[in-house]
Length: 141
Image 1 (cartoon, rainbow, N blue to C red):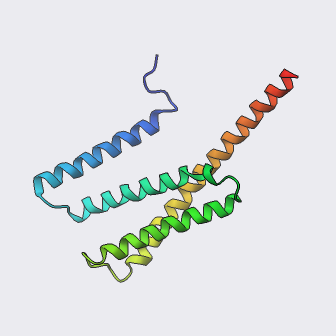
Image 2 (cartoon, rainbow, N blue to C red; image 1 turned 60 degrees about the horizontal axis):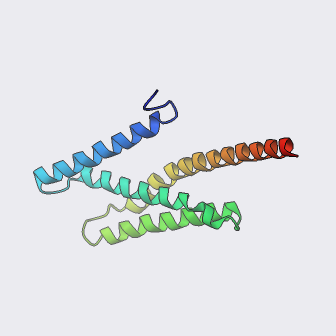
Image 3 (spheres, one colour; image 1 turned 180 degrees about the horizontal axis):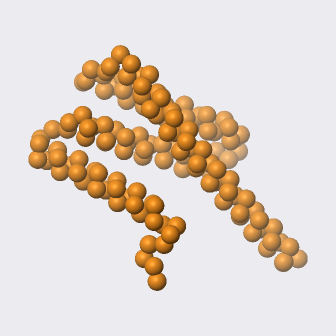
């Protein structure tokens, strides 16, 4: 019996990497007494990843709306949150003059790729479920 199957390998690696990275950041904070730029950036990336994953996971609540509208609203909510976070953080730290522009692209490109992979996987699962349902109906009747 395999403990980690082929299908679970990459998700397991990603979870391990995340736990180790966050552990490293916390340990460095405990030993140094402050967050450096690298640690702060890693935490921000983690929080943005959490938010994006959560928002994408909520698509099923809006099935009655057109999918393109749902995807667009999800993106707009997230980018507004990211830009709002930068604006709020600007009260404590200096934001580079191109900071908003850079963060827009640093968020938008990976989000488009990630959301594309997510929704393509979702369509694949739906097609597979429809096929199984159709086979069941054909064999049942």
